[in-house]
Image 1 (cartoon, rainbow, N blue to C red):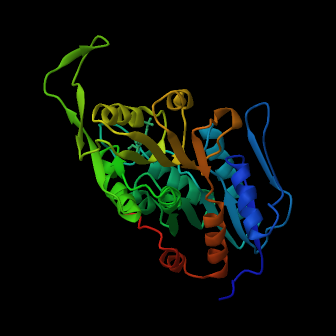
Image 2 (image 1 turned 120 degrees about the horizontal axis):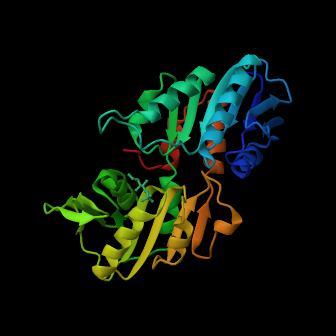
Length: 331
Ligand code: R5P
């Protein structure tokens, strides 16, 4: 099928320039020429240095650190595209931040994930392409089309190539169990689930009364190679708690994988010095050289994004790509 737009252009903010360049390389086109900079008064300035009039424009921006700057860059770039009469504007957001603020689970808290969706639409996005949202319902925060891809199968393929016959997938919490089950099924190995339980007795902690948590494991990991899978690693706290539990239950070796390497605070140091043999992740977020170590493997989502961008541009079904490649479902 042909595109309703003669030409396509791909631009990038500073959220993950290496990934944007890799996507353009796969698409066989140069990255669009744009200036995205910050003045000394902290105002962000954007200028598209080439015409986008009536073109099919993709703005790639991963919501990396510094987060507020990255969000503003995206919004300003979308506004620039809209005001320059782009034919259609797609926001490509490999990592969508604020995914954990998706419900009012305490009094007087915002739903920031929804607010961000509103801002992206007001700024000028006509559709969104993203990868493994923290919660699928975030798609519904947008009233424009959202294509959510999963990079889980890229991780599955990596572990499948190891041909382990003693592996088990571990979900770090009950909330992720369904996606972890899909992951385990794709690998053809069993699943274990770590479950956090509130203990009834109140204890004194940091001068405050708190309910201690206890981690239980559903499943038998003794003598097994454990692959903990999660959508993101931020501080590494959740994963490392599970690692301790797996060690105490006689796991043979422990591996961890996630789609989004947020690596906040001292996560890198904590992961590097942990008993985890290997951390496998993707390049939805930039990982600076100084944050890499021998036990870190980074797989690229650039081919997946490029193929889907090409399909969106050409008006070809993205669903078919999933079926052809046997990508696991997001469910
Ligand atoms: C939580 O619901 C997520 O799936 C991750 O487990 C969480 O974002 C990881 O955060 P951290 O690494 O700070 O424990």
